[in-house]
Structure formats: structure tokens, C-alpha cells
Length: 341
Image (cartoon, rainbow, N blue to C red; front, side, top):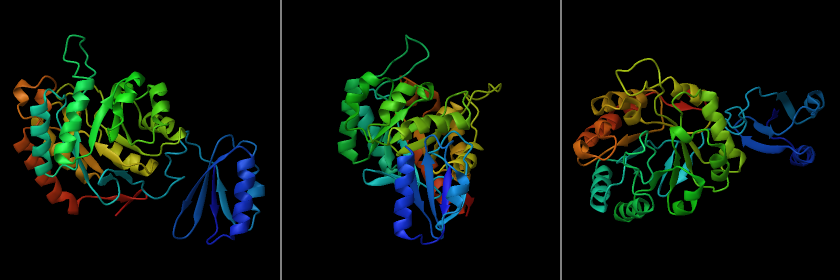
């Protein structure tokens, strides 16, 4: 339920209203705009008398929200959410460019790639320490040692880091990680999402291979319900009948998510296509769709990469993609408050 207040409500009446709503065991999310203030109510609103609320002097209108995701809903929070990360941010007027190897393989490799992507314009560094693999015999990552190497690359470049968590037992190792990534396979690991909701750290959630946008937003809701509003949504391709590419990149998800939610949205064209030659055109298309950022895999020697070499760009190729994306951003669609500008 949302309560739309009249412009400049009398403070004492507003305080009394909020106290009454809190007494009904409802959580209140207040969003102030230029022309009105919105109170978003989370909890059991079935017993709340809408007519009684509408009769109040400071209330302009009351509406029930049908969507099950409340905290992530654009109706509750009209302004786009901006998430501070180190010296940069995700969302708002900053275009986030996250780059780095699929797997951290050695100190030399991660530091070399980190320095290269920073020179090319990356604002954050990605690198996998724990790797979920389809085959139990494939390289699973360097695990805790990989995180230590990632921190060395962070010290070297100053770039905030993004890396994936696979299990609750690993959480204590992520103290220095700037953004915790929840992979597509873990998108509906609800116990993990609940715990991440208690951390306060930015959480990047990748859409599952066969999940709807509402299911993605409900995963975000799990984190936000725990008190952590720092959630980033990531479109990384879905599984369809098409086999020419690794997955089908659903770019319609970007404007749809922007309309449905206030959370930042990024796109991963590397995992979406699985083919290095497709990363640049899909990155440009994603930027044109109004996305807040990109996540791109970069490896200094893709041919000999221990995982996902076929989709990884060389540092030189990434530099070309970065320059092309930045050149076209002034002409791309941008979304603010669910509206194209």
C-alpha cells in the first residue's frame, strides 16, 4: 500500500499518521519528491481502512500495490537508487564499467588485468575466487587464496572489487569485498539472500537462466527485507531454444526493470553470449537501452584461461569496447524515475 501525501504536509499530522501506522506493525518507507511525499507501507495492510486514510487532511490518495515486491518497487521509491561503492557509485549519472577475469588464476594475472582495465576506463574490478562450474572436474577457483590476490589487485589499482559468493560459510572471507555478487545459480538461494540482507554491503544479483523479472525482483526483495537496500540487478542472458550463442541476452529487461523498480540495472554481455566477438555489439546495445553499467570479462591470455576463455576479451579488445561505449553514451536512452529522457 502507498499513501500519497499532499504537498508540504503539516509535520505534526504527519508524525501522528506515521506513529499510528507503526502501531499497526507496518514498516514505513518515506520517499520525498518535488511535488509530493509517498509513504510506502510494508506488512499486513489488509486491516488498514483506506477510506479512513483518504479522509485525512494531509492525504491526497491511497493505493494498494498488487506486486509482491514492495521495497524494490518503483511505486514505493520514485527516484533512482544510487549505491556508493568506494570512490565511485552504481546508478545515477555515473556509468559503471566492471571488468576483470572470470577466474583469478595467479597474482601476476589478476594484477596485470586490473591495471589494464583501469587504464581502459573500468571503474570496478571483477574476479572470481569461488567458481560454480557445471562439471565437478573443472577448475573451481583459488577460493580464499583467490580473494587474497584480489585484495592485492585492489591495493595496486584502487579499484573497488566485485566477486561471487557461493555459500553462507564463505561470508566471513568477504569482509574487504566491496560488492558481493550472487550468481545466476544462486539467485533463489533464499537463506543466502536473507543473510546478505543483514550485511549492509552492496549485493549484485544476476538473473537466473530461467527466471522471470518478477522472480529477480523478489530475490532483491529478500535482501532488502533484511534491511539492506544496496542491491544491483544484473541481466546476464536467459536460456531459450536458440543455441547459436551461449544464452539469449534479454535487453528488454533493462527498460522493464527500470519501470518496475528503482534499483540500478547492469548487463553482462560476456556470460550472455559466451562469444568474445559478440561482446562489443551487445555492450553497445545494452548501453543504448539505458543500462547503468556493464560487467565484462577480460583476460590477458584468453586462449589459456582456466574458465570461460571463449567469451573473455583481451585488454586491448576491452579498451576498444570501453571507448566505443563511452563515445555513444551521450546519445543513449537514459531512464530516470521510470521515464525516458
